[in-house]
Image 1 (cartoon, rainbow, N blue to C red):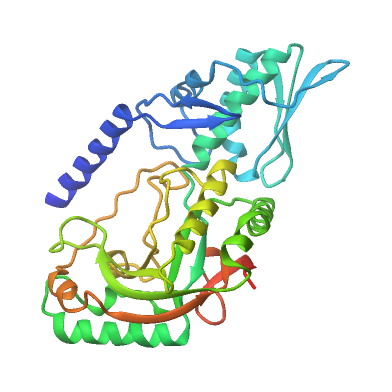
Image 2: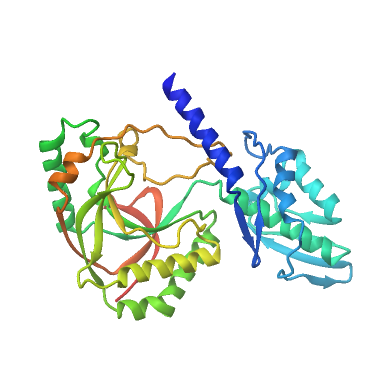
Length: 373
C-alpha cells in the first residue's frame, strides 16, 4: 500500500509542476506555452479531442518563418516528419486532422502508415496554411517528447585498463561494503558499457539518424577540431560522487572524468556540442551544461540489467512513467573509495549510440561517429 501511495504522490507532484512551470515549445524562432490539461491514457491513435485542443490553444499566433509556396490553386506548405508520428496528426477516426482542416480552412494530406514522406498542407489563404503548419509542429514536437529515447551521443570509456580497474572497484566495494543496505553486485554497471553521455536523442527514422551524423560532422569542422587540436583528449577517470543529496540513500554513483592537463577543453567541447544539438531541436533543452560523469552504480540495474539510467516521463503511448527504486547506503563507499583511480583514457571519438543494442564486443552499437584524429 505504501508503494502505491508513493507512486500516486509522485504523479501528483509531476502534474503540479506542469501547472507551475508549463512546458515551453520553440518553433520557428518563437516560444509557445503548452497549456497543461488533464491528460487521458490513450493507445496508438486514440487521442482525445480535448487533448488536441489543449495543445493547439498555445499555437494561435502563426509563425511567419515557414516556406509557403503560392500555386494556381492557392498556397502550399510541406512538413517533414517520421511516419511513427503521423497517427498523432490523424487522431482517432481522423478527428484531429478534420479539426485542423476545419479550423484553418486547409486540406492536409498525410502519407499512409509505414510510408515515409511529407505532410502536405494546401489552402486558399496563406494565413490558414501557416496556422495549420504551426499547429502540426506543436503536435509533432509534443508527441516526439513523449517518445522513449532511442539514441545518445557519448564517448566510450571501455579501454582495457579502465575495465580492469572498474572490476577491481566492484570487487573491493562488495568485499568491504556488501553489508550496507542495498549494496549488491546487481547494481554495478557492465564494464563494457562504461560511457560518458553528452545528450539523449529521439531518432525515429533513418533520415533523422543521417541528420544527426551530418550535425556531428558540422560540429567537428566548426569547433571540435580547434578544441581538440586534431588529437585525442587525454583524460583521467578518478574519484566518485553521488547524484542526489543524501549519501545514505543513493540511486546513482558515478566516477568523475576530467582532462589530464587540468584544462577545461573537454567541458567546453561537450557543452558546445550540446548547445548545437539543442539549437537544432535534435536534443530537448533541459540543461545548459553537460555533467561529466561515468555511471558505475545505478539502482535501476537491480531489476533490469539493461536499464540505462535515463528515461522519459512518458512511454510511446503516453503513459506517465514512475519507476520504483531501492536506494543503497553509499556512505561507506564514499568514505573508502572517494579518490579511487579508474585509469587514463584517450577520448578520440564521439558516437551516436543506440540504446538497448550491443555490438559484437558487448558495447553499445554505434550508428555513426566522428574521430578527432
